Length: 81
Image (cartoon, rainbow, N blue to C red; front, side):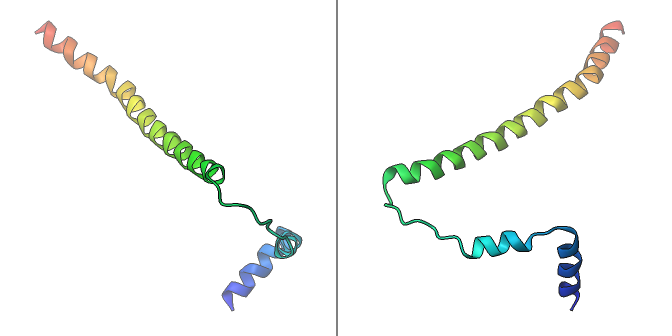
């Protein structure tokens, strides 16, 4: 019952019913499963892996920049003693 209410509420605000109806009648073409067909999926997967690992590298670099000032301050304090 609660799911139906949420669907009705969402249906009033976002007209997604015509899109769902169009997708129900869409025909997917038959194709040959060749090597070239699989290269598209492999390329997309490797691109996503590269973006994710690049984001993690960016987090590491940003962390180094954020903590660099305190590291320099500690090194200067050690030199002045």
